[in-house]
Each structure stands twice: as structure tokens, then as C-alpha cells.
Amino acid sequence: MKLEDLEIYNLSMDLSDEIWEIVIKWDYFVKDTIGKQWTRAMDSVSANISEGFGRNSFKDSRTFYYYSRGSLYESKTWFEKAKRRKLLSDEVSLQMFERLNKLGIKMNNFINAHEKLIEQTNFQNK
Image 1 (cartoon, rainbow, N blue to C red):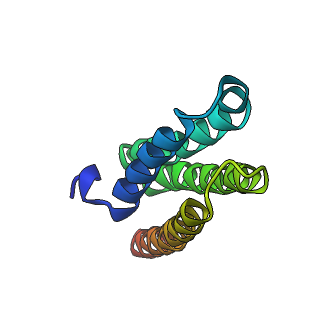
Image 2 (cartoon, rainbow, N blue to C red):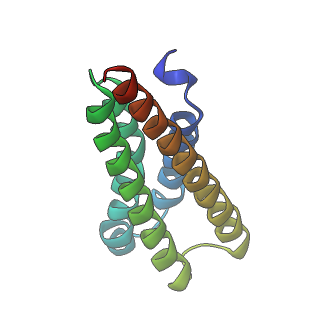
């Protein structure tokens, strides 16, 4: 399996590109405050998935998948701030909300499956 085969990786890459396209149009102040934070948080999701995927052990990988999930939750906070401050249209807000939640569910499922692999490996090594 390749990194590019992971659905959560592809979803996070697409979302970070979409956030970039939204933020790049904002004025300087908004871009410098909320925009940079939101973009960095979402970029960190896919970056940590990549780093976890490239690690040598299941436990090392798990750490980066947890970081990735944390970055996703941070991204949700910056999204909420953008929404509350009326920086996003209702249509964009609804679509972004649904996509962030979908990624969160898929990421939790991925982490749970990864945990089961760790448990199986530990059981087989005993």
C-alpha cells in the first residue's frame, strides 16, 4: 500500500487545498490571524498522516496519527471562528462542516483499525 492509497490522506490534502483557496482571497488582517492558523492546522493533518505512514513501527505511526487528529480538531476550531466572524458563506460553511466531520469519522475509524493491528501484533509476539 502507498500513502496515496489512504483515503484520509487524500481527503485531508483536498481539504487543505480548498481552505487555501478560501483563505488566499481574504484581506491581510484576516489572512494573517485566522487564515494562517487554519491553513497550517489543516496542512498539518496530511503532513502527520504522511509522517506516521513512514514510521518503522505501529506505535510510532500511532503517535503521528494522533497528532493528525489533533490538528484536525484545531482546524475545526479555526473553521468555527471563520464561520462565527462571517468570513464564509452559508453554503461554504455547510460544505466545510460536513467534510471536516466526514474526515474526523474516517480518521477515527483508521486509528481504531490501526490500534487493532497493534493489539494483534502484540498478541502474536507473546
